[in-house]
Image (tube, rainbow, N blue to C red; front, side, top):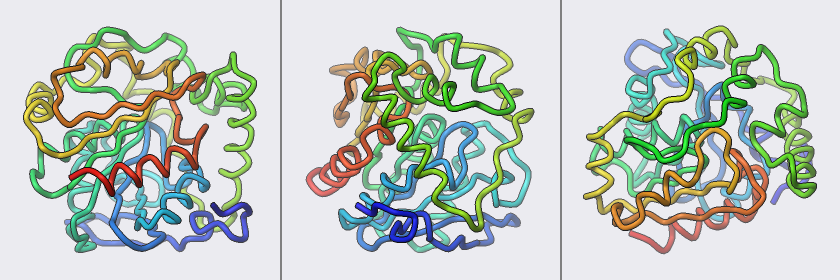
Length: 287
């Protein structure tokens, strides 16, 4: 794993651009090997992925591709936070880059996008590696009200970042949060602009929902798919409680669940090396 701003592949990767049906999408690529296309979280950009996590994925023999959604960050076009619209980006990017047998991954909102991609482009992606996200359909446990309170603020301070993505009651989780924040600042050039908070806040105006991902067709796909699906979660995720995945035990034939203790909505940031190695093993040993 890279240990400094100077040696980190992710912190120094050049931003590249590709034209996709009239819009310009920004992306970065590190490593070589099996492609893993990662869809980012709500209010996420190219620069909200922990470099330690991306670097370790690359160290495990993967080509790791991150991108900004249409109209957000460094990408052009008209933004739209509907996952049904966002799914065009990874599908079209995989085609434009001529990726062979790519896997798709996603964190939070990006995990929803990744699941839709499996249904919208059958046969395109070999695996799905999901992090801190929700399954489709009705859920057994809603998001905590604190999520909407914090996620709609113009800026979140360090303590609010802990509450959103880590476990405030755990000193180990707090230490991991501080380390992640340091690494997220490693990149100094060509940083991706923040998602406008007014645009993001409007997407959460309706508040917590009984079914935050109302897509019965995607749920039916997951019940029948042969594509291996992994979900990595934290045991106290205030956004997408991991209990909603366990409620589907016995219904999703290819689903693997990994839940980290004393962890929150960003398990791959609290455990960047362990999560990356687990994902790499998942991609290498399932088919």
